[in-house]
Each structure stands twice: as structure tokens, then as C-alpha cells.
Image 1 (tube, rainbow, N blue to C red):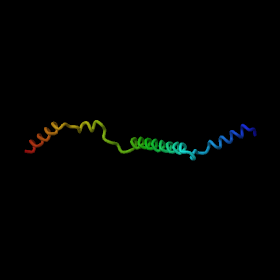
Image 2: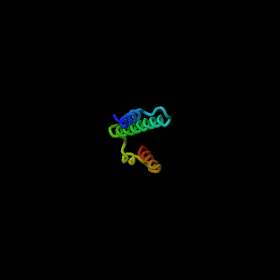
Image 3: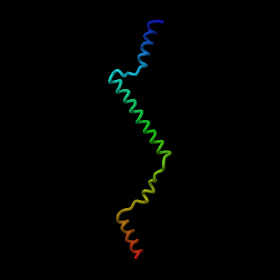
Image 4: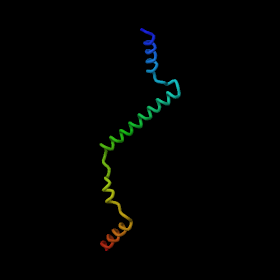
Length: 83
């Protein structure tokens, strides 16, 4: 084995170890874990929205919208019909 191959093997073995001995290495690992959790949560939310229970559609909510004047008129008509 030549000296360059030995140096290369030493570099590969040291590069394969996680950098837990420095604060920068710990921060890097924490950031990786945080991003993994965030994207897993985002992906899970998308899957849940696709296959989960369906919510009311926008047009159904729009049909239920009323102004206070229209609601008052409807209540007055209902009161007049009940007399």
C-alpha cells in the first residue's frame, strides 16, 4: 500500500464518524433531526388531508353565508308565517 492510499483510508474512516465532539457538529445533527421531523410532519399532514375525512367545500360555506339584514328578514317572514 502506498502512503497516499493509507492517508486516504485514514480520511475515510475519520469522515465516516459523526462530528459529536464539537458544538458545531451537535448543532448540525440537531438541525438535521429538526428538518427531518418537520418534513415528516408536513408529508403526514398532506397524506392525512388527502385520505382523511373530507371537510365542507367552499361553495357549501358560501351558501350558508348571510348578512344580518337578510337573516332579520328571514326571521321576520318566519314570525309572520307563524302568526
